[in-house]
Image 1 (cartoon, rainbow, N blue to C red):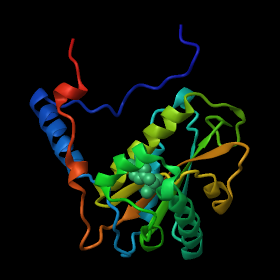
Image 2: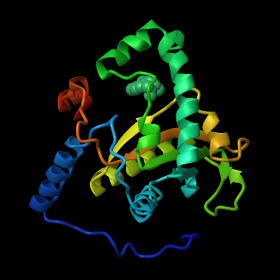
Image 3: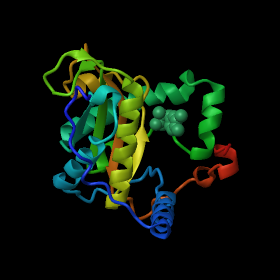
Length: 225
Ligand code: IYR
């Protein structure tokens, strides 16, 4: 006997094997067209589009379905300016040596540096926070589980939702990120900044580093036993 209420799975969609393979191939081809972009147009993007993508992110699986995430969607120019100033100050010391030689060497093929104009130019910044405590209802105060895994999944959903909608993104992790808590006025005791996503249209002259196009082969990433 089940001691928990359930409803029938009524929205599952089955496809023929041929259609399944087609859909998988189409999705893979779309994933191959997703690139991390570092130069953004200032063309506006509607709030409704960002809201819809965040709703999609909020459907991600999470530990005990506690949904231990919070998304702060920023379009206010003053807030963006503060984030740019603080991120660039941190990144300056990072690139000046704090990162260490090995890390800086790994970043060389990407051509990144401390200059982050997109933090002001792009129409939307989305600061993602993880929550230590919470629960299935926003007002709950239970311990959350698998927080990092859950928020990583939701972030992946968000990146893919934005890509499927036709926007480009940059995953940005200024180090340390704690300044985002203050700028976004979040509760430092319960929440931790997880990642900053930049979203918008690509600039006309946007480029992709060749290095970023190298993806491991199926043989390298998978084993079938
Ligand atoms: N946070 C820095 C450095 C950086 C680190 C990694 I690992 C990257 O893949 C890219 C950048 C920055 O945003 O420039």
